[in-house]
Image (tube, rainbow, N blue to C red; front, side, top):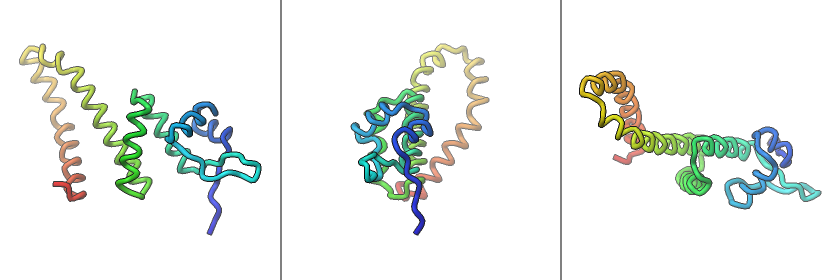
Length: 146
């Protein structure tokens, strides 16, 4: 069995592009956790934690609060032990929630469009939207939810 790479906090901070203090804070919040401690009591973090940290950074850029991120990550951890699949599905769920918020923000503007303007907007939008909805339905059906 090969030993997987573990990172000390300074190295993890450089790789993820965040400060050591941010890593301390995320650790104290339970968003990330060290794999183990070294003989000198340094916290050691795995590549999985690095990937999780990068997802947190991206979600923060997408304007999610740390509480929202923590709740979603905890929910997905329960659903599946397959980290990559659950991580991707969680990102998809959060992205869909973000899109829903954005649609709600532009709805008043859409409602003010003249009929011809609205027709042009929806004409461009519908093919991609239909493809996305179809892909989501396939995913939902595969999960046996519907």
